[in-house]
Image 1 (cartoon, rainbow, N blue to C red):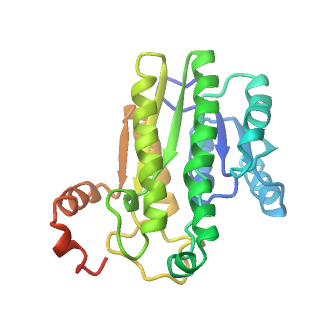
Image 2: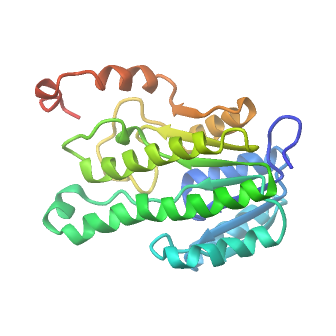
Length: 251
């Protein structure tokens, strides 16, 4: 169960090598989280991530998980919930893709959509049902400001995040009153390995800043978290810019 401050004692990370997820796990471990499951494709990186968190004093286990194999989600995630209650599920997997390349090779665009949206729908529903069965817990979904309005520079990725965001909001409404809390996190440009080499956008943030915002959101039982918070105002304005003008903006 969560402690009096809303901090989970047990955490399941879907996307166990995500920099944001690991920054969040480190922060929560420092605040009393004691059991962590890292779900991801078996790899040296996944084992290295687990070893790092064990070094911080947590009981860390890994579980095979592939976003592109929805048929396996009930079995793989079911094994985790069979071991005991999970206080928080962090849905943190996703790929950025390469917009120009993916436009030329549609199969790559499909992979972005299947990972970021289809895989998340499957894993999110499996996790939500398990949390509802146990009667408590939080499902934290990493969305993106890219999903707020499609941009020429990354509309394939942005459209997948728009779908994920809408799904997570609807799921939160469906679970209202069940004891399960759904929180959507919308970071802006995050300085990470995934974005290395790409032009940095205004109001850029870091995995550690996102982790801090997630912890605060858990304490407040927020439904939506923007990182940084100023993006809420920026995106509210951009949503209402006429399309003829928006397409000329350097975004």
